[in-house]
Image (cartoon, rainbow, N blue to C red):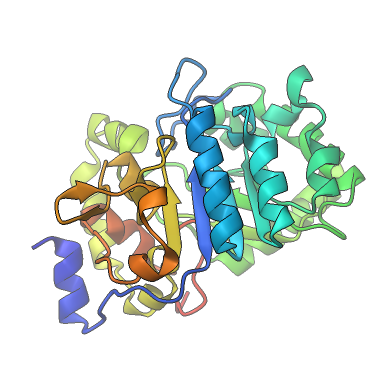
Length: 319
């Protein structure tokens, strides 16, 4: 039994599926950045991307099952040649669409159209900005990233994001620590970005870095693996369990494989039934309700402190 499962049992908080709400599509690993905290190990040299046959199967599933939310992620999801197709297909069934955007993609010539396209389809932009200072952002995401991010945010503001359209910023801690209080950090972000750059946004997600992929390698290289895992275990908050994304989300990979969340996907924890690995076209929201949620010790990251998953501090948490 994992430490995570032991903590669930000790605290008498079973982890079971709730009502399906979100289809999260990871379109692939290609990205224009190489961030130190990236749980996908994404970067410019990655080639794993969803193909046309798979994309159209996913589109057909959306048309049939009409998820309330379609959450498009990557890599930089906009690099996928099917990104616009997913946005338009999801919006055609009335789904709320989320674009997990790294901001700098907007500053490239090929994707300069994004602010207007996203605004036209009323897509929520969830944008990574790990700090409101250039030094911290560039240290985590690369030289020059902060200035490009600020420029992209101004373009999003110009088409209504942060005022009439939802613009969510995402904070990830730098190093082996938990995020600070989300509400207080959001107030700091809003004050500093407005004061220095005239930028406005809707809300902030503070997300704990999970000990997988590139961040896990960094923890081990820094000799902080044991410390961080103990920190996560010691910070376990049973009040976060009801709000975990795995309870209402079907996550799929670039081949259409079914997972409980994007983090499980990176550890190849694919859902199975009677020994058969499941793909999106094998399941329905109703059939997924019978599948056990797969867990391991990396799940401690979603239940530590105020909790996070992909949606920031969880409502049930005591921050």
